[in-house]
Structures are given as C-alpha cells and as structure tokens.
Length: 598
Image (cartoon, rainbow, N blue to C red):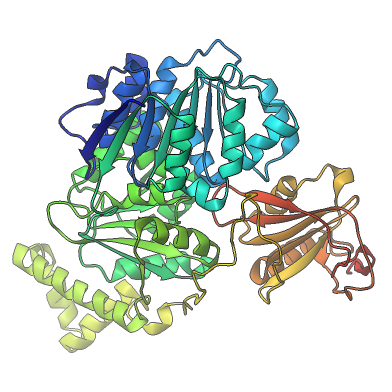
C-alpha cells in the first residue's frame, strides 16, 4: 500500500492561496464567489487539487468544523457528467441532519444543473422511489436507508459509481453502521474513487482502510482545539415562547455590541429582524431570498459598523469574516456541530475574548449534547439577566449617552425650550416628567414579562440505535397532550401532510411533536401542552359544532387494539423526520373514545 502523508496545521483558512489557485473552473469559481467565500480552508486547499488531478483514494483526518464538505463537493462537481442519468457519487453520513446539510451545500454550489437525491429513514419511501427514477447524479444518505434501497428494494443502481464518500466515518461506526458500510461497499464498482473523512482514526477505521482502500493519499489537518480558546461559549435555556424576550434582555445588558445572529430558516430571519427593528435596534438581514445586490450592500454596511446586528441563515452568512465582532448569537441551534463551529469561528480574533451565545429550548437538548461532544467541552449554562439588572443597565446607558451629548454641545438648539420647561416646577420634577413621556414604563419592573428558564437536562431521551431509528420505550410525559384528528389514510394523510395541515389551519409552526398514528379514517398526534391548547382553540373556532381536531380520551390499555402505522416525529432540528416502529397489541388510545365536542 502506497501512502502520501500531508500534515497541515489548520487554524481556519489558508490565506496564502485562493480558490482560483486550486484549478477550479470559472463556473465553480463563480458559485464560490456568490457565497462570499474568499480563501479555502486548510482541508480544501489540500484535498481539492488531489481530487481534481490525482488518481488515488483520499483519507482525510479532520475534526468537525473544518469546512470539509466543499473540499470534496467542489472537485466532484467539476468532474460530474450532468448529461448522464447514472448515479456518479454516493455520500454516506451518520445522521439525517448531516445528510441534509451536505446535500444543501452541494446544491448551493451546483445551483440547478445537478440532481442531488437524499435518502434517509423517516422520509416517504414512495417519494424516494419516484426521485430515484429521475436519475440523480449524486446521492446523499444514511447507511440504513441506502442499504434498504440497494439490497432489499434493488432500487439504487450504483454500478457506474465514480466516487464513494464516507463522511464522519468514526461517527458512523460509533452508531453501529459497520456492517451496513461493508455491505454497501460490496455493491460499488472496483474502479471507483473512495474518500473517507474522520475526526479520529480508531482501529475500526484503520480496518476499513486496510480492507477496502489500497493506494491512497492521507491528509491530516492538525488543530489543537476545535474552537478558538478566545471564545467564551455559553447558553441560556429558555422556553420557545420566551426566546425573543430573552434575546432582548441579553442585548440590553451589553453596552457595546456588534453581532451576527443566526436562525435556521429564512422565515425565522424575517420574523426576528422585524421584531428587533420594532424595538429600535439597528438591524438588517440576509438569506437566500435577498437578491445579490442587496446582500452586498447589507454586508458592506455591517462591515463598516453602520448596522450593529446582522440576522442571517447559515448558507447566506457562511464565512463572513468581520474581525471586530463581539458576539455570535445562535438564536436557533444549527442541525450539527460543524455548522455550530462555522458560526462561532467568526469571533475571538486578534487575541480578544468575545462570546458565542446560544438560546436552547427543550427540543434542542439532543443537539446541544451532540455539539458538546464534538467540541469536547461543556457549554456553560447562564442565568438570564434579572429585570432589575436590565433596568440598571438602561439607566447607566442613558446617563452615559447624556454625558456624551453634553460634551458634543448637541443641546444648544434646545436651550430656550429647556429654560421654559424649568420654569414650570422644580428641575427634578420637570426632568422626571420628560423621562416618563419619553420612556413610559421602560424603567419599571412592570414593563417586563416574567421569563421562566427551562430547567431541562441535556441528557436527552432522544437516543440513536444502529438502525438509525428512535429507541423504543418512550413514555408519555406530563407536558404532552394526545389529540384526535378526524382525517387519516383515506384523506391521503401522511405524518408530514398531517403536520402541514395542522400548521396551515392554525397559521403557526408547532413545536415538539410525538407519536403520530395514521389510521384509515383518523389520526392521533401528541403535542406540547401549550401547542395543544392553541390547536384545539383554533379548530373549535373553525367549527364549534364538530371540530376536526379534539382532545383524545384516555382509555385503559387492555381494552382495545388497533392496527396501523405508528410514527415518532422529531423537531429538534429544522429538518423534520419520522421513525416508524411496530405496533403494540395494547394501546392507550382508541377511536371509540372520540366524541365530537359541541
């Protein structure tokens, strides 16, 4: 076995070279420029030329957060035959979240000229079959679902595969996918090129390398720490409904702030930016629906300090490099640790110590644990600023601003008016009246809503097994409510369309959702208590005589049995998914218990 070893010290990007130095075409360079990428990361500058020009397989040892997706995506897009209907690239990832992120990253470079297909458990199998018939050039998936299509259904044809990529290989083996990976390799052609990326190189990885990968280049990205030691990472555990108020409190106790605030979706970006503007903050936003010219203007204003808060999605803001940022705010946690490190790496430059702040709700507990595991450190949980603390900061800020105005002599045009006002009463009384008129109850504790911090543990019940499904044995918990929906399979309902139906009817995104049961003529769904109350009220308003959605009645578990499909729905990330299980012979819930409410 011949092996070329390249060890690279990587603390971020390789600023000695540019993407144009790596041998990429003008078409790809244009896509890179559109995403505001300036310099390749260390792993990109090492892997891209090897993949473009070399004939060997590639093993890359790189921790999460080193921008490796583009390292293999860009050269593969260069080599892709877009006119072919053959699957030319197969990418395996340990989780559906990472699969979605990799697919979206590839699409962002390729635009519309390449067909990328996602395969993962919980997705509608009929949709996957339909998409596979359209001839994707790139398939990204989890091992469990990929082997299902390959070995069982025979619907995934990879005899003409050119590239086989194992991303986060150590994680796949930790989860228990060794057998699936080895079985998938048996379906791949001999003359393919293999790329394996792993943060660590345990014996299990070396066994796969020795068994299936012969002549290869080995790229090792050395980094002492995954995250910059100058960055103080902390989080606030909050209820979803209190998140924006919690954000405002954190802003209020900062005398000087210069922030990028991240949201998962474009809709969230629009909503948060609008709310901040209504509070009087200098804020702008960018995401995929903002046109290129406007994005460039917004970024220019942000970089020169004209605006202090930029609200953005990950794709729109990736690699924006502003040296004097004070904070990166994760208003919503990302889907995976790699995106988290991409976000927070923007702070802590030039030896300064700055902060990365995350707002964590109950549904984010699993991803928080995953991030902490990946970065090998605990993220400190802080208490939200007390109302009295916020008020004191506001008072001090007002005093400091007034001192600055007095020094600048900006008050000269108001001297005559001031003299007239002071004749009305004592100076203190006059000033107090003006402050009350200007600020209302802003300096009063009654101005603020009570925020209760969520005390959930990050040791979540959301655990994985080797089949990439939720472990069995979830118990009903007090904050869940079971709802009956008078629509089912006869109405062509699936778990996804049921969620879409509910959210459309109540005009609101739902939070945690569990135990979706789709029956022939009806369905069941578990929602958080507050969401359940909201949904029930909305449907009662729509049809008070016999609402489509009512609260299910609890029934003794021994009295009935039902046959059907049981689903668990996960909302701990933006990419919602379901996990199907077998049906229990005894159920808590029965259609006979439903009675229309008047």
